[in-house]
Length: 306
Image 1: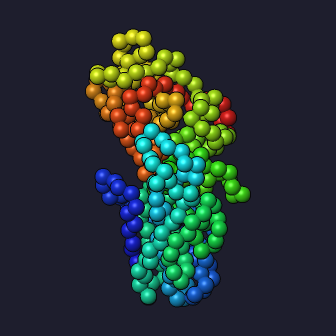
Image 2: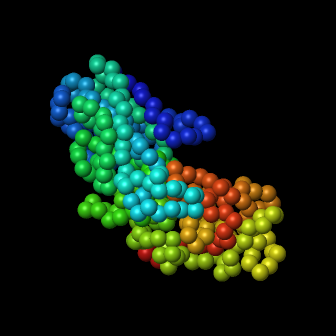
Image 3: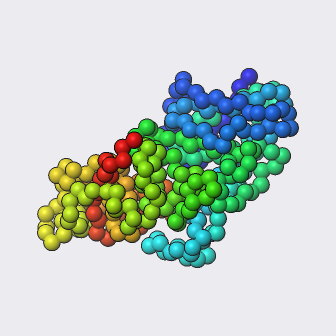
């Protein structure tokens, strides 16, 4: 007998379609002493994720970050975060999942992003710079990608905190561990997941791994963006801008997601995917936190193909 449990951590416009593909994970140990066999699992959206066990139902919790804005440096981005909203380290709050006492498995239909599960006698709170799944076998992290391409892999960071300057730990960079990411780290994360050897760095450091689509700055105006020193409007097709390209304001790195403006002109209503206070999200250029800053359009260099 199986139990179906749907976790909704992130807002979406429609329910995900349940497909036949499944990922199954068997808990280790026995009644009162279960643990996860590994720290992380990676699945694709639409795949059913199953946890199974033997005799005796485990105490299983679903966990999520208490806050989606974290900084140990007191950095105050353009969104106007005050020091009162700045935390020192990520914390996770856990809630008990009700299990059928006769069941030996449970299915989860997870949305794109990072999800946490915990085993134990109580939920409580975990705080720390190291991803909790690396600190204890009682924790499991499930990373759900929206697709196998760059934009799809970036979606694994949904539900993680906006973490200013993610650092190296004994287990790897905090962004690779999905503890959290800032704007540049998010863009780099997707490339690293594709197998490219791009080191983590800030908004200025990322530029050496990018090629400009045009050397001119893109300036926002009432009819859309135009080229610096000219009234010529920026046509997306002429610029060659594609989903997955980088729009860089100097302090903010955003990944171009989708054009939705009129007449194919780059404008304030076009969509980007970026890390921001509140966690990674799709935003319009108008609402990305740095409007009306000038932009420069880039594409990732192909050097370093695995």
